[in-house]
Length: 47
Image 1 (spheres, one colour):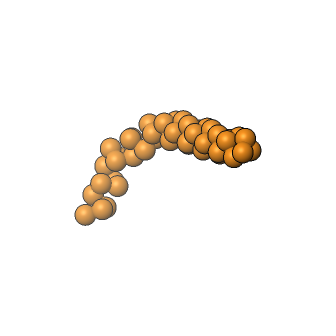
Image 2: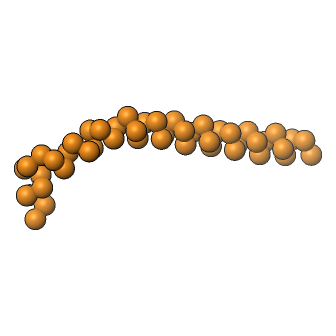
Image 3: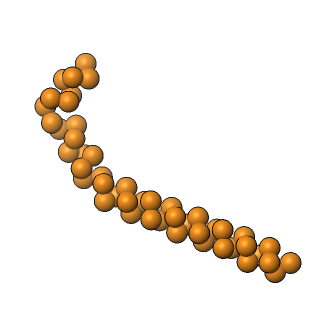
């Protein structure tokens, strides 16, 4: 029975660690994505 708890907690912490790493990666890429719409060429080409 204790194996069920160990596996469940292992998967939970693994998932939380993966989400935390993805969130850090997205935050590091965010400044590049925020500056992209400000370029004059791209906004006009979408219309």
